Image (tube, rainbow, N blue to C red; front, top):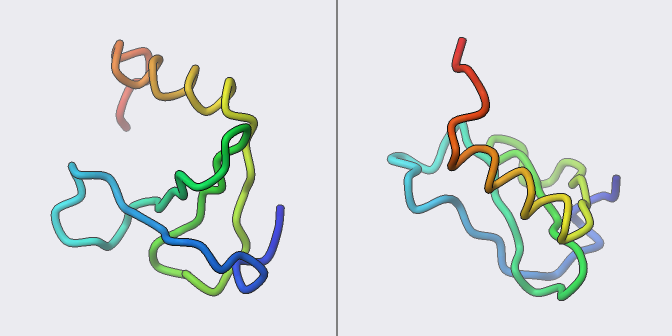
Length: 69
């Protein structure tokens, strides 16, 4: 976990996000990792995932492997 103030990078929300709130933001700048942060707390910490792990998570979401509560 890192503080986002140390990352001077461009963040983006999902294209499925309707109002920019209550979602995560990601950064596509890095080639081997994906920083992720909470859009409601942009100055807060970011979690940094290896690219392979984040890609695996996205594929699982696309396949519907998670049940919404």
